[in-house]
Image (cartoon, rainbow, N blue to C red; front, side, top):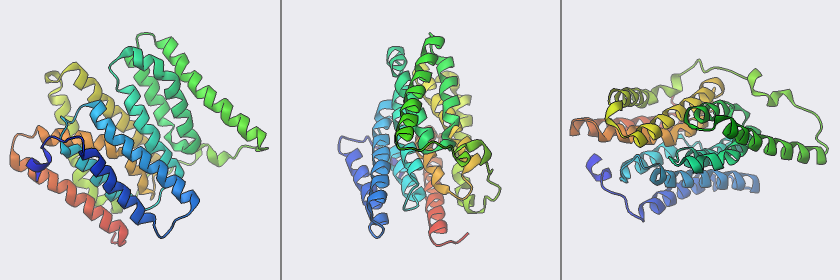
Length: 301
């Protein structure tokens, strides 16, 4: 199966994967259809679909079917059937952030920091638990920008524009009180019961190995590859902080890691020294995700 998925993808590959996930979304929600749910699922689908095009833009997957397949399988297995609008918006905005921040063109990045700030602010409005992303972007900005002060101002300007617009709209509609429950720092509840996540242990171990292998061969990689891959790792860390602090039993948070995990795992599989290791690891990922899906669907854990 690994050899089959290692074949080069073509122009029709992405529409096929997107069509499959659209079918999954429709099937899961056909019996619970209403306007609000339709809006959420539309946002979710747009975020998922845009991520497929991120694979080509980031260019870390050698244009094969493997990362596309893994991403599709991650979404299918982790998608609970309906999402909170915050997670749906986060999936969409994360795709935009990945496209903007992984650009190796400094000119493109510096012109996009206002938009990045706006996206971060929008993320916070819909899902306050995504606050680690703001610190991630600031660290990324400091580490990669030539004009740190100016780009930081652009980033903060984007945040302020969205904040001003949001408070103006709320004031106009006479919403003039602040709900402290909206402030995420008092709602932290670190995950302590990992029983339902046990099926994902093989994937976690493979991800740890992938990170280890990346840094073991760090000097062998091209500067662009090092930059983009390390960016994905730090991006994943920001998502992981939100997951650990706020997920509790809301396992749809794991969808935030689906895209970077797909790239990290697909690259790890590609560079494994033996074919049997590649095949076994691929099937371990598939079985883990299927077991997790079945366990949650049938309440086995």
